Length: 258
Image (cartoon, rainbow, N blue to C red; front, side, top):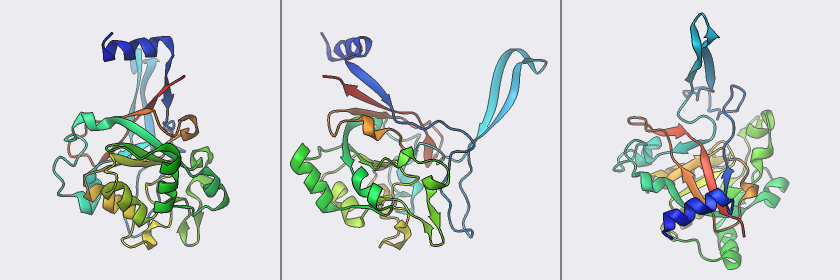
């Protein structure tokens, strides 16, 4: 049996399970809030065009609007100043093969439960590797924090000094890029950076280093607790928006049930 035939048989039999890592898009889903002097990300909006009525007797449909970076979404290199000159850096130019790859899930949920500003460090990554093996080249690395279980104001966790949520340190992101050559990095929070990421050097290091190196980001992921530490395959294909810096998307993980 060919690899594709084996894969199709696995999907049909249920031995390969499809896990949805995507939040439902609705007007109440939180979006990142920047300081007021900057432009702001638009929430999801949906307007009914017709619903089997005088506006369209046999069909129902909607107009939708949102930012490229609303809900569960993909960040392309062109999203950040460090990646503005990266070749094929917008979502319509990226090789579609880049959207599918192996997944490593680093479980930081215990630390995040105790500290809203929990940091993924190089030591944390190497400790994970001692248990699960070296992160392979071109892997997606996802930081599990169980932040996706939060709702409403608790998700953004805004305080007087801004948002507080877990994320990677600058050294951790550089390690993943320079020493492990990852495909991209994903989080359950509203950004790939910690909520207080503006205070690092450089500010927002996950965005700065990932996109400057031509890597990708995934934010607002859901249900990472359903994935094994290794062995799953991620499918994360953004909309093909001309010159798009990112896109909402449906993120799926393929997990082999043994």
